[in-house]
Length: 286
Image 1 (cartoon, one colour):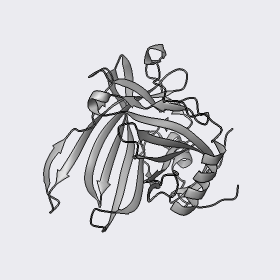
Image 2 (cartoon, helix red, strand yellow; image 1 turned 90 degrees about the vertical axis):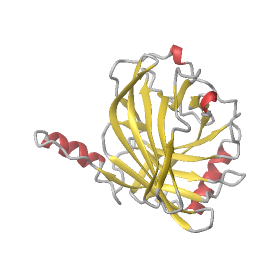
Image 3 (cartoon, helix red, strand yellow; image 1 turned 90 degrees about the horizontal axis):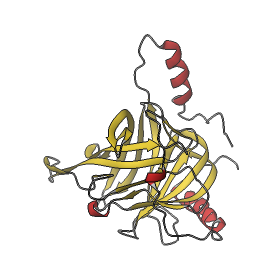
Image 4 (tube, one colour; image 1 turned 135 degrees about the vertical axis):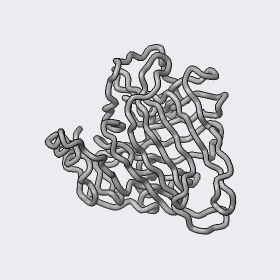
């Protein structure tokens, strides 16, 4: 495939092709993974090829949309791995911080908890959320923890944030916490050879549809590049799951400072992971 940049329109065309290519795949009901049958190794790294949490860089995503009055606003978020998190259902979690902004104002701050089993599945064990509520003058009024949940609390069960099985049509729960209004689902939708976003060109990209049975009208696509992770989100699709009205794409990757005692390690690590802006990813694996 020739290199191309996916605008909302061309992305819709490409997605349409992917959907047509999977019409022969029977879309079964989402599976609730069996956590009791999973095996975890203490301190195991999350190194899934499409969902690696191996560095502490800040990944920034951004896009422009409109508010309720039709005025343009910038919707953005940042992801950063924080390291070891709480122990949930007997498993040591890895914490990722997700901070969402609207026109630069902090809107939501979430601590997501993940763990990878020996089969390669990355489990979603819960999230602690702080939502920020402002008045018309952008002054903070209050906060709340709506949509927070943890596996093992209120009968909540974990699901896959990224399954080891990336077969087209595989449908699964990402979380199963009905009491906390958290019933997100994922479906492996397709594979793309490459995508160009603001931060660079990425190869071997996995496309996943994400939605919730709580509101069938809500859903969108996320795109994960092999060896890197999330690079793009498409939201507000039409009835044919095409033509997203709004997208948030990776715009920058900021390396954290490297200790002076580790110059060679830092040079190798960050030279590989972060010198990506407007540069093609060098290697594509099977």
